Image (cartoon, rainbow, N blue to C red; front, side, top):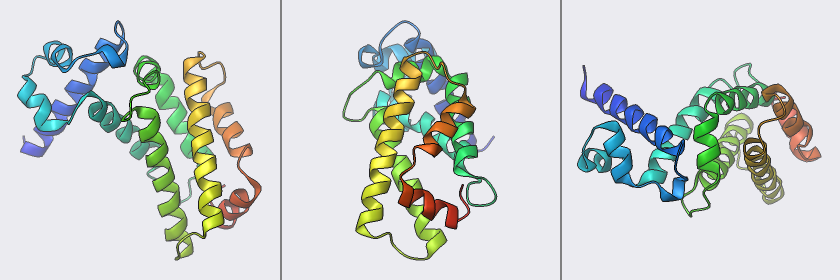
Length: 188
């Protein structure tokens, strides 16, 4: 097994351990010691892979985003990408319910917002061949922030809507100018 594969496996083991810890302890109260004891690795191993517990949580979330949005722009729509994201969140409900309760400066909410905003910005720039103007940047930032807020609310209130319905609602709530741009780029 290659070193990179082994490192990736270790990261997934640590993610599994933090998910187990989240079943009984709020994220802000979980310690690195708890995570490594649950996982059976040393603190040194943890810190070779992650800066802190939030870095671990954010890494795991990044895996979700890559899986959910990797095909967008090549025949997949925003709604399809969001549906995949919500299905994954639903499957990992304990992890996300715990992670979204944290308001730390390096929290998953902040990470999700930053990541989604950058993803859409890059996608728009790639598809249009130019940087977004100030107005569209503002609209996109507002939409991404609102989307993260509604995602957190969905998770923390028991995920009453289906992933498909949540994706449809977030797509329908898109500001008009952003919707027109996404339609023109074949993303809706």
